[in-house]
Length: 477
Image (cartoon, rainbow, N blue to C red; front, side, top):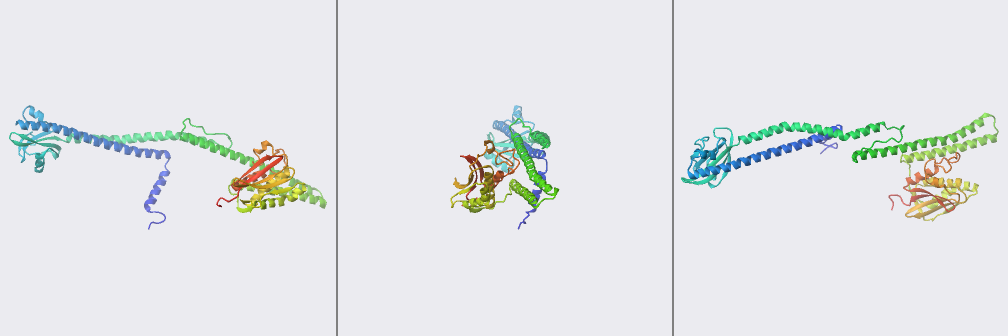
């Protein structure tokens, strides 16, 4: 049974792959290119070697057919293959010729083989039936010879005409080609590998240029981007992607800086007020009423600090994707009634009315505490900046549930609607008291955590703010 860690062979392959992955990409490309070129050169060399051998064999065979025809013609007339022009026709040098009887006796022939028959007994039998081609050692030599034998009817009876040619020139030509391939192949491979390395270096040069540019990009140089290559290729698309990433990072860093700056400003105001109250309380003896007023003011500022810290914590968790949401089926009327109960005393003190308009059968899939927090922010915003009665409304639309908070105030400024859900965004930027400008941002992140959205609009004679939440959880039918 194989172990859980794999066989030694697999482990060895994994180590080699890991070692190759550590090799620079330029060298890896060169090695792959060199391996491919080695295969191509070997295939071309083999093809040339085989083709040349076939071409030489065809040439030898054509010569043999021509000479055996001449020998057969001489045998029919009874002329000798060594007499005058007959010798020229029969061939000379590396060529040999014989005229044999059916039992292997040499009737005539060139001087090379002498009186020894070029064909063996079994070959004589086959040659008597028709033309055959065989290869032998040259008589008295180690060189190979190719023989073509064919039967012929002569004056003295049936004869066998034999023409042969040495294969030494063919072997020398193939050996010369093989030597040239063995010498030229490695040289060509080295040159091709160097060219491949240079090509890989040229191809990666724009990437290296981008790397050096990216290394110089810093937060102290906002707006700096990588230069785009002129060619619309993969390198250009990489540069465009990196520039888009730099833009997103720059935007995130800018938001982070504004967030820290605004948070510091918001924390400074209640801390300064709290410190002033405590210093005034300690500066001289105070009556019980004065001390109570100072402690109450300090408690209010402390509550403001606590709410601001809680809001910042919610936003930080949302940015990290860790805002906890525990969904449950909650009747919409229950959510709205709970929020109205929480703000009813404050509304009564402001001589405002909180009303509910919702179908009792309407339910929403939500984290009850988070949903009440979001609705509470909308109600607080309506009580602080709106006027007239505040209507808490729930209705279904397109398979989702909308939870509305509608007032009868002046509504939102048109320019504020576009940035209302941004952090520390206020309808009146000059206002330093009251909220920190995080209420609507909290509403937005809670809605997104539920897979919903938050909206603002100016209704007829007032403002309308609402949450759009799913009526079922993602896995619920």
